[in-house]
Length: 598
Image (cartoon, rainbow, N blue to C red; front, side, top):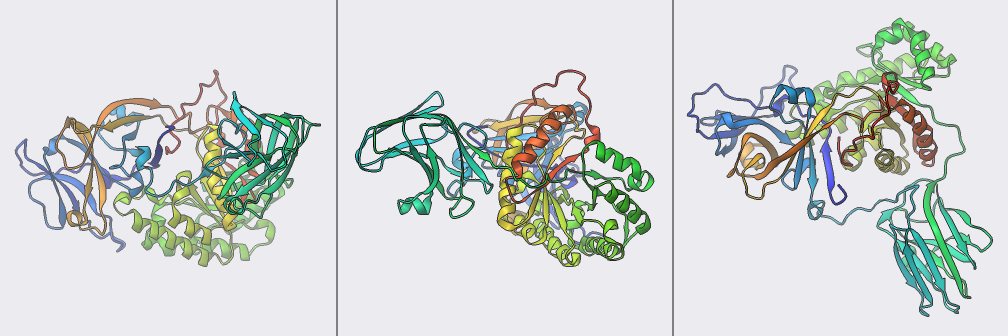
């Protein structure tokens, strides 16, 4: 997906997204109504999300909608799309469904990924991407000689830069640029080269370039073949980085660079603790020694444990204190972990805040060795039924919850688990910046380049906002899923339709998009059609290290070393390390999905 932007919502959004058919008598060819109906108030008094459904006949009270020129029996499924899906802009829509459901022949719309054409990727100037690390940059940089005497000839061939300078009295050299932002990490510029003179190396951001200034990095001299030049820790705008300048000496000289890399400069401090989860409270309550032994076996020095509470009190404080003391003696830190998408609903905010108060009160009553480090919340509120039809409202509820938890914590550290695709969720990130001590990013990929690419924006964000960032990898079992591909039909009959409903057609405050899946291709629906073009099976190897445990053990220390270059790095976490299976045969190359997928 080199020429596309992919944005996929990592969830199948609930029962409200499934087809609902009405027990009404209608002719086989009677038209359908795509309806948005007000739902009943929940039993707890909270408003339920509207319901999206397809029915024949007139619109009932409390419903609005749009007529579709297709009989209800020809519609397999409907579901709302979120604004971030941008389904009406897409050139391709990918639908992901569990393989078991596919084999059963159950028509449904699962998680969605949209592939946008470059022209539709954004209506604003393209944001700079992070400069790549550990790769030879020479083939990726734009080269421009400078100098009024025009005494420089430069070219890149086969990944090798050659700069030939004639003698002269005016500054001259080569500018190397790319549309990147520099990561907010400690970085070095590493060069392998040959030179018969001394070449100066400098960098400039937008402001320095406008003033014809540059920050000196060092020299590439004739007495060496390798140089490691640290980039300044401050004094320049990393987001506005403009170019690297290579300046010729006053005499004739040649510089040949075989490799030019940006590399993270690892921290010299202690390695951050690895972490994992203990989801069943009965495990640490009933077999505390076994839990700690398994943690040590997998190199885990932080555990997120489920701690039962009753109101604003811990249910088993004595058992928790005993386990915490035992863990402390073993050098293992404990966090309480909580997680339920419905915690983001306003009706659940008070009870969720009580869980934080329970831990804070417990900590006040025990000695330091028995205390918990804080509370982690894994609230994946995008899994709430009907999220797609009320995403802004649910996001606001999540942000309000975070503010309430911060107030209830009274200084107790809070950690929030987030998906990697939240890197552009400005509203949610702003709330996290105010409430979080740490965010744990579900960077669930096995491709090393993707892991790094998804981690970098969060690590940068953490540096900017003073929030710790933990990077989590997956090692648990993941069921196979099948990817169904639909491409723009361009007026031809199509099976999948993206239909925009206006506020007048729904009674909602803003337009929203719905996906309608037909059993047979058809033309003439009021939307954008996508025709089916095939499917492929994804076995989970791109997401989980379950069958690649040896590779995970090699990769973890490499990531820890490199990520430590960010002051925000709070360590690695591995989900379900005990599920990793010894390989019984050589592992296949992971089936790498698009960069924005799940």
